[in-house]
Image (cartoon, rainbow, N blue to C red):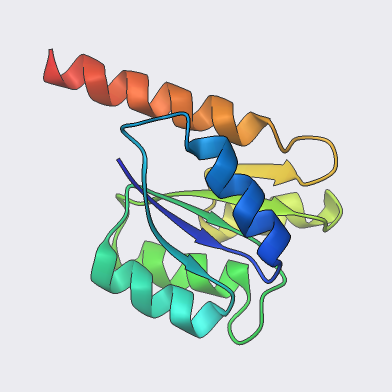
Length: 125
């Protein structure tokens, strides 16, 4: 499973990479700190999952998701943000599949990846 990460914090990107490193079937195909670069990479790399922050320079995370979902429905998106739950409705309307707080829900990212890998493995069998 190909995973793309987008956040304006190097520490968050490193933490996500470390968290996902336990899943040998999850390959981090790119780490981006800008929405324009993220959009271009999503189009080029076509990951299975993208973990995106709302507040990134250039296009924000919601704009990136909207543009991609208009082109490709197959990519799953997790919004991982410090933004308040007020943005959850906006994120889901934009096409995000999950909305997690960096403060309270960070570990839930791992659970989503684990479940996606299980589904992927079940399809193979």
